[in-house]
Image 1 (cartoon, one colour):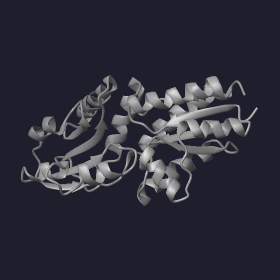
Image 2 (cartoon, helix red, strand yellow; image 1 turned 90 degrees about the vertical axis):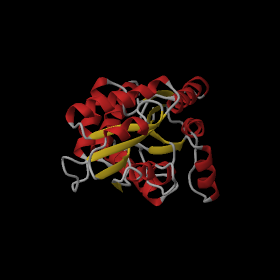
Image 3 (tube, one colour; image 1 turned 45 degrees about the horizontal axis):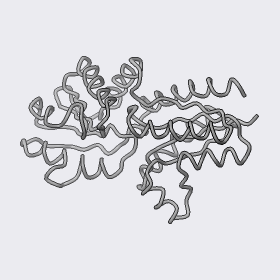
Image 4 (tube, one colour; image 1 turned 180 degrees about the horizontal axis):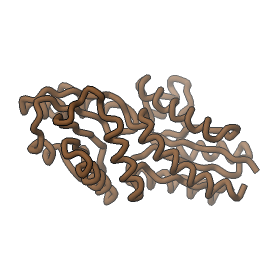
Length: 260
């Protein structure tokens, strides 16, 4: 019997985003020495770009097919996703197909914000990784992706958990849950910090959050007369958030590998 780990991300086109995934890859390999670790990407556009650059660009289904062809039997799958939304459902569907057709034993780890324990750990991670230059009276806004899915409520749950620890730290999302419109009236400091609640820094962080366009979160905060300071670092780059995904991988691997 042969065991392996498949890590799943939306993808990353920037050097910073790719380095963030590489660093997480290193954490997993240190945790599971001797077990092969591979990646799959859910973004078709990014897979096409990687293929054009002659880099590995497997979808979840294709990666699992490769494992089966190479006679692996047990694969623990861990997506670097924030909530159990549509994208996570698609990963699970691809894994179910592999289990049915490729004779693989697979277990999928859950996203960042799944259990009550996750919410507590994520709230602690938010505070642990605030900018060292930020003073206690200054507002900090985290921008998540959001979703048109019932799981989007997890952003609001995290916002509530963080508010209880520091009322100047706000959790929002581009779609659903707590929007920037809900946060702007609460801002009181002259200087506002802006951080992505996204696994890696990509177009959403660079344009929708920190961009110069009229509708970017940065521009909308600055329109209030505040100085806005974006921090371009994804959650996968912070130990506190990475530890949550690693814990979920441990659960998936324990469940999957105990039969190997």
